[in-house]
Image 1 (cartoon, rainbow, N blue to C red):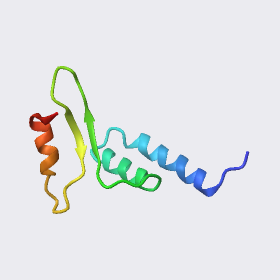
Image 2: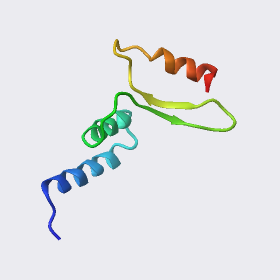
Image 3: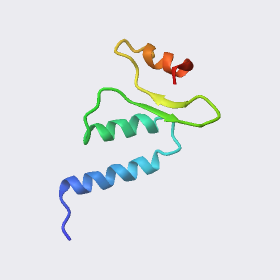
Image 4: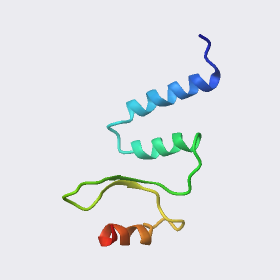
Amino acid sequence: MTMSLEDIAWHRSVGQMIDALDQTNFWTQLVRLLEHYVPFDSWVVLLFSSEHKPLVFAECPGQDGSPDQLFQDYLNGLY
């Protein structure tokens, strides 16, 4: 089985993600990795529960660097 440079890069990136699991910049690193493979405009990492409002692990900032107001409205009761 031969591996291409893309295969090697993917496996290296996955290894880096595993190493970063307990670090504060994990979500940012994951988003940067995914941007190489999937186009997207915004992102958020949530944990949903039937007993509580969604828990936000990380979210992309708005264009001005502040939290996205529509998303904040969602979290504050629109969900």
